[in-house]
Structures are given as C-alpha cells and as structure tokens.
Length: 183
Image (cartoon, rainbow, N blue to C red; front, side, top):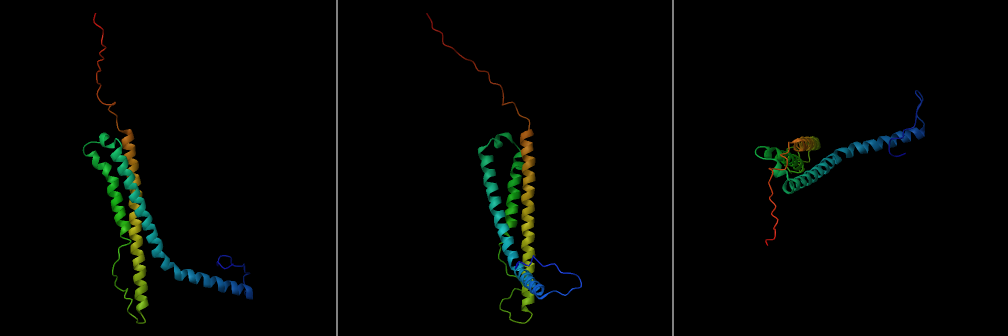
C-alpha cells in the first residue's frame, strides 16, 4: 500500500467502499506526485547518462591508444589503411562531442525567471520540455555513435585477424662459424 500499484479489486456496478475510496485517493495523489516530479528528473537522468558516455568514450580511447601504440598494429597496417585504424577514434570524439553538448549552458528564450506574469509559467514549462527534448536528442545521437564505433571496431578486428601474414618477414640465412683449433 502507498505505492499506488496495489489497487483493490472492485466489482463492476458496485460503488467503492470507504476503504477503496481512500485507496483510490492515495493512488491518485501518488501518481499525481510522480507526474509532477518526472519532468524535473528527466534532465537529471539525461545528464547522468551523458556523464557515463563521456567516461566510457574516454576510457575506450585510452585503451585503444594503448593497444595501437604498444601493439604491433602500427607495423601490420601501412599506407592508407592506417586511416581506417583511426576511424574508431574519430567516431568516439564525435560521440564525446554529442554527450558534452548535453552539458552546454545556454540562454533559452522563454526561460525568463524574472517574469512574474500569470502566463510566465507556461513559457517556462514549454522551454523546459524543449530543453529536455534537445538534450535527449544529443544523448541519443551520441549513444548511436558509440554503438556504431563498436561495429567499426568489430570490422577492424576481423580485418586484422584475417589479414594475410607475410610469414614473419624474409628468410635470413644464418652462417654459423665454429672455430676449429689449428695444429
């Protein structure tokens, strides 16, 4: 009781009892409160998700640079194919840009907190919901790019694994000289 989810069963055509009316009033108050708080929580949840994307893309870039710099990837890939190895980094940077745009403070028309007219709250509410939509759009765009980067990484990994090997380079003839004692 109290969470608004456990409504009592009512029979059709029978008016609710006093207990049922109290439960209905409590559920209505609960869901009305959720309805009022949901818009305020929307920006917080979008910004929290954007923070996670910023952290994740930064960690992916650091790990990728370590693998490329310390691994044999630079020696395996030559020429224009090296640009393909940089493609995930470009996608991550673009995703990072999208996630950071969620945090960019902007002056918004309709968000005049000094306006005390009777209709001011309507403008403020519309601006707030517009801001939430824009932040969500940036977040979805950033998240889509992150997913695309995983697909690119999978293709690059498959390409590196299936790339023909040169057999370890050219064969070097080794001449072993064994000193023999002279009489």
